[in-house]
Image 1 (cartoon, one colour):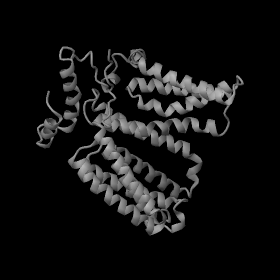
Image 2 (tube, rainbow, N blue to C red):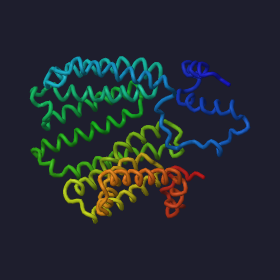
Image 3 (cartoon, helix red, strand yellow):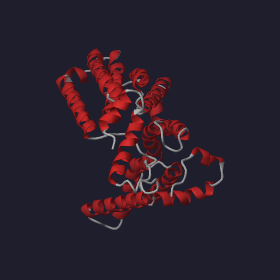
Length: 353
């Protein structure tokens, strides 16, 4: 069997990409253990596979990154939370540290999980720079439209530069989030804050925009073999909660009734059907919390105790996830039958056996 060191050397020499090396490792491991069983049908490829880590080394490095920035934030906590230039300077220092670490762990070592963490830290640091740079110190916890615009612009510009340099898939989600924040800030400034009364509509529009971007990358890689699938995965994780929350949040914060609980379950099931069609379990994750609330409300009518209510709701919710996860391909085949032969299927992942 080819060793990991040989694969790493091949990546460094430019013979194969790091993504190809990631795919070769499990294949060669299985081949060495079961050479007669290496067959596509016996070891199917997960179409929603996301590159989080190649081993515990990635987790260990990620832990070190978290510890470093935890110490940085605790040590400089007072200026970081005081607002104004103090916040901007401390955040700027964090951004510089994140970039320097990315040069080694992302650009040089190609570590997936540390790269994801550094992307998030860098994006947050850039947003804080804009948040505090031109604002009075007292505004740090009560932002106005100008601060939202500035923080979004800095996050957007920083994420674009970070993506240009490091090509981390999750960075596109930060870019889209920055665009959303910029639009919300501009609307808040144009309407003198009245946009707050229409946040559910803004959330819906933002979620649909993120969903459209995710589907663009999914349509470019229907077999889920390139980094486009990673880009789409993170965008789906951004889009799903925005869409679901915009539809159901009013129900839970205003007037939850038995009818609304049943309506929530129907919405979640419809959301699940969309997830099956596009073959994205990530789309369904955001809806699970609302499904849990709806089940708990309906069970509460049966006069269960608080502990019984929690236990039964969690068991039912977990059973739903396990049942759907186990029978995902069968359920997808059923949902996809009405779409058979249509042009839409050319933009969707093929149905697996």
